[in-house]
Image (cartoon, rainbow, N blue to C red):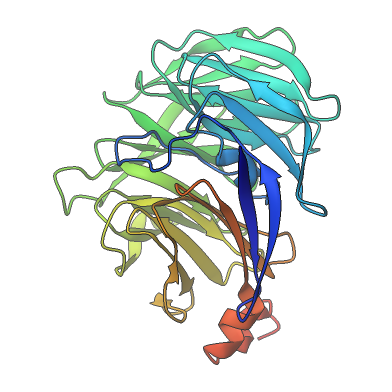
Length: 337
């Protein structure tokens, strides 16, 4: 069955017909699992539209065509992340396992077994020798990429599901978001939580669902089921701002390459662009036909890709949106402005 990948240019649309998971339901309800897009490669947005079924697909954005055959999994795929050099792809699956794939040959590379519940996130560590995963079993685990074996003990601090993880720009720290509404900072060398921020508490269900660092490593941003986005000063260990506009679960966030624009995806069927200089929305919400599960900026920051529960992926012209809002300076580097 054909699906569509739509490329949005603010005033007009061009539509490319592509193939995606044929078993994907016509509409997804709020109980479907989290999926994350790799924030450095917009193609992962198209791949993550597959995360509500048991396959994952790589896409060529130049022609809108799939690359190779679908990557088959035994259960639902929750997360996807490319290695720094783009040679390996890591996927987290509801079958409690993590898998790596050779991106060039589109073939299995390694299987990582040990988590006792679904794997919700995976990140590659600098050096290309290890990955870290997180799971509903409440743990983070470090793995040897070559052998597939766990390195050391589980990382744990409190109970409950761990929904997401993100690596600091210097590659020395990891943050995790959990169902208790806390954001935890971990030291990679010791596997210990060295800080915990609790701020997402506006609702009974306030699990932290998504995380993103600014490039300078000074600011961390988190999104939650409490409908809010929070920014945190890593040096001073405190909250610096609360961004309010979404009316439902904030499911994914991404920061533009120049660290000045935030994109947030929500189950209120919208994506918002935010001015990180003042914490205000940029222009009206980007409307979708269904819940939005993923967002990613292109490497030059000019395009935003979104993955939607309507089974489509969309790209948006960031330059046009920001310019129409009269905020052209946000397209410049902060130093240049």
